[in-house]
Length: 204
Image (tube, rainbow, N blue to C red):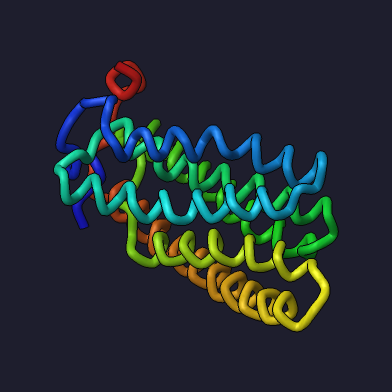
């Protein structure tokens, strides 16, 4: 698989996908305030739905309109990770998800963060190619969390939401870990095949 830098098409900053990613980033603190402050769950769900829809759209638009950019390749996964982390914190503090789920998902991201740091230091490369499994995992998790939050309500409809929410969450967690294995294999291959870059060269 090709490394991420071969996919870069432009250095443009003002693109529609980048705008969507930036709006998603702005929604992270808003979501935390809504769910932990006034506990306005309805509006918090709206923010999560926007995050999921915009995550789907920015990739589609970037490819269709040839607006793939270096900034976008940073903003998109950053927004995904921050949304997942913020949602985990909010739902955990509200008592809606168990600690083990938070530990598994956050632990996975910590491991991947260390791996990416090592790759950057050793080869000068920033990031890994996004894998379909990783995108599918993020999709499942971004749709699981609003359903779990909706499941906090009373009544049969909310119970159904809770069931589907946990189905998405468990599938998403499994795919998230599977994607981590694929990324680790990818990282190992890069470290074997790419020459080691001197520190001064790697950092410019």
